[in-house]
Amino acid sequence: MKDDPAGYLPLSPATLHILLALAGEDLHGYGIMQEVLRQSEGRYKLGPGTLYDNIQRLTAQDLVQEVARRTDSARNDDPRRRYYRLTSSGRGVLSAEISRLETVVRDGKLRVQSAKPRRA
Image 1 (cartoon, rainbow, N blue to C red):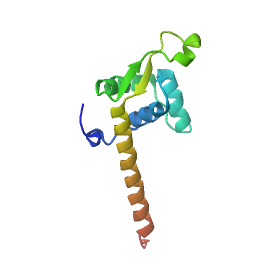
Image 2: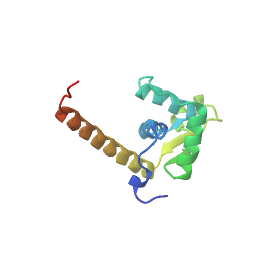
Image 3: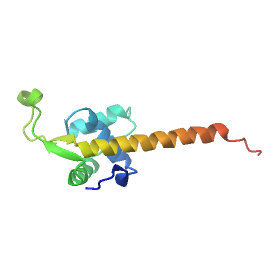
Image 4: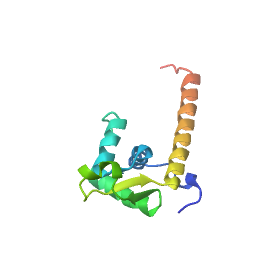
């Protein structure tokens, strides 16, 4: 794993959305897809191939880890489901990306506000 979270940046949209989805709670694959849809208000949809390719890479990078079934849903849960959790390293990378994006948005707003209209 890279020691500096900035070494992972910028994150792809899929990676950013997966890490954001896992920031709140442990989720299984379908739960991650549903949370991404909810957070993006339906504007970003992860397919299973994209999701699981990213989960595999994020797990290898120690940004996400597979965890045992959640105890609060164990009685209603399908035992085949795999749950995923954001690691502390993953949380650090997510925080670094959020800071980077805040800077991009702030700089973009300043440029738009200070831009002079061009003559046609």
